[in-house]
Amino acid sequence: MSIPFDLPADDHTLSPRTGYTRAHWEAVADGLLTAAWRRATPGGALLHLPGRPSRSGVRSDGLEGYARTFLAAAFRVAGAHGDDPHHLLERYADGLAAGTRTPGRDDTESWPEILDVDVQGQPMVESASVALGLRLTAPWLWEKLDPAVQDRAEAWLRGALRHTPAPNNWYLFPYTVAGFLDSVGRGDAETAAARERARDLLESWYRGDGWYADGDGRAFDHYNGWALHLYPVLDAHLAGDADALAHHGGRLRAHLDGLSLMFGADGAPLHFGRSLTYRFAASAAVSLGAVTGHTPLTPGASRRIASGALRHFLDRGALTSEGLLSLGWYGPHEASLQEYSGPASPYWASKAFVALLAPADHALWTDTEEPAPVEEADRVLSLPGPGLLLQATRADGTVRLHNHGSDHVRPHEGESAADDPHYGRLAYSTRTGPTARANAADNHLSVEVNGRASVRRRIHPLGAGHGDGWGWAASWHRPVFVAGPPMVPGLRAESVTVALGSLELRVHRVVGAPPGSRVTLTGWATGPEEPTVSALHGLYGWDDPAPEPVPAPQGTAWTPWARVPRLTGGCGSTTVHVALACLTTGPDAPPLERAVTDVRVDGGTVELTWTRDGSRTRVSFEPPEVRHTRP
Image (cartoon, rainbow, N blue to C red; front, top):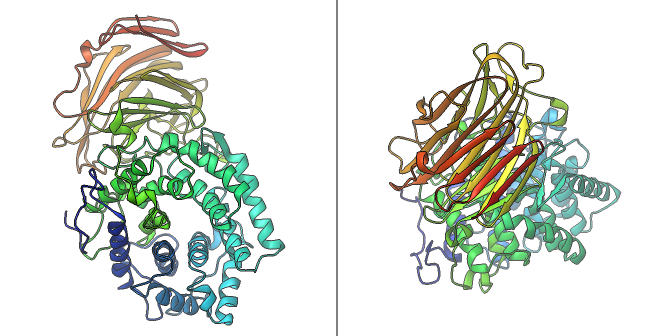
C-alpha cells in the first residue's frame, strides 16, 4: 500500500533485505509528526486525532497525542544533536507552556491533572513520555524555557510522584519523571523515593531469562521490551550510570536472546499480548540494545529486525490516508484493541525511534544488514522463566510462540471466567492472530461439561527445555466456565507442547472430568485466501483423527474471515488426548497423518516415533518430563 508521505529511495546495497536506512527512519518520523500536528489545538498543548475516544476521555486523549508524538520528536532531534529542521521543539515548547498554565481546567489547551490510576490515571502514563522527551532535548528545549514555565511543568509532573500507579509497569512512569527532575537539578527526597520504589518492584518482578512479569502475576508480553527494559536501561544510559547500565543492560542482553527470535522474516512481531496497536514499538528493545551496546546481536542484524518491523506495518496499511497511525494492526482492527486504547494510543510506536539515538556514523546504520535469527536456521528455544517456547522455521520465515506461562491474571483476581484471547491461547505466531472472543477460539483446549465450554485463564507452568532442534514446555490450568458454576471441583487440564521443525506435538491430560464430558482442541486460525496453511491431526483420544473446520466470521488481524480446525472427543475421570498441529506457508505442508508412528499411551505417559528421522519422544505427566532421543 502507498505511504502518504515521501521516503528516500530504497538502498538495497546497504540494506539488502529492507532497503531502509537511517534517512528512512528520519523521514518516517517527520511524516508521522507532520500528519499528527495538523490536529493540534491553537496553542499546541493537545493533539486531537480522529477516532473513537478512550475510556479516559477526549482531553486525556489529546494529551496522549502531544506526549507520544513528543517522544518521537525527541528521539529525532536528540539523535541529530539538536538539529531541528522542522522546528518541532518550538511547537512542543509552546504546547508545554499552554498545557501547564491551568491544569485541570475545561478549556481549549489545559492538560488534565495526574491523579490515581482509578480516578484519572492515564495522564500518569503520558507524564513519562513528556519527561523523557524533555530529558532527551534538555539543551535545546528545557534550558531555553522561561523559568515560570519550567516551574509549572515540574508542578504538573510531580503529580506522577504523588499518586498511585497501576500495579505493573506504571511504576516506571514516576521513575522516569523523577529521573528527568534529577537530571535538571530538581531532585529531592520525593524523586528519590519514587525511583527506589520502582527499582524494588522491578527486582521482585524479574523471573529470569531476561523477562519481567508485568506486575505481581504472570503477564509476559511486549511490555517487557517497550517498558520494563526500555525505561531503566535508557535512564542509566542517559545518566551515564555505569553500574546501573551494567545491571539493567545485562538483563536486556538476555532478553534479546529470545526477543530477537520473535520477528518473522517478513518483519512481523508476534501477535501476542495486549496493546498490539503499538505495532513497531516491539522493536524498541532491539534498537536500545544496539544504542547501548547491551545486545547479543550484530548491528546489521539489529537494524534488519527494527527496519523490518517498521516497513512491515507501513507497507500493509497501518497509516490512514492522512498519514496517521490507525487503531488496529494493519488497518483498523477492533479485536486487537483494549478499552484504554484511544486515537493517539498507537503513537507509543514512537518508542521504536530510540534507534535514532545512534548517530549517523554508528554501526547500527553503517553496517550492512544481516539476516534476522529466523532467516538463519530452524530454531527451537525454551524460556523457562516466563514459561514460553519459541519455534522458528527458516523456509517460511514463521515464528510460533507456545504459551505455557503468561496469563495476565492478577494475584487478587483468583480464577476468572472471562476469556482473554491475547493470553489464554496455547499458541501465537507472526502470521496469525487470535480469533475474537465471540468466535470459536483458536489454539485452545476446552472441556465441555453439561454443554458448557471452558476457557483457560490462570496458567501454572510445569517446566520447559530444549535440545538440538527441538524443545518443550508444559503447564496446567483449571478449566473455568462463563455460564453456570465457574468451576467443577477437581477438574484440571495439563498440557505439553513439543516442537520439532514445523511440527507441534500437543499432549493433554484431563483430570477429574465428570462422566459424559467432552473435550475439544483447535489449531491455528487462517483465512481461505491466505497462503498460510493450518493443519491438525488427532493421534489419540479423539472421535475422529480428521478435524472439522469451524468458522470464525470476525476473522483475525490478518484476514476478515477465518476458519479453525477442531478435534473433539469424550472424557471422564482421567483421559489423555494427543494431536499434531502445524502452521506453514505455501503448498508444501507436511502430511500430519504420516508424521509419526508407533503412538503408545500408557496412563500418564505418551511415546511415539517421528517419521522424519526416527527420533523418539516420551512425554510423562508424573512428574512432568519430556525426553527426545535420536537413533
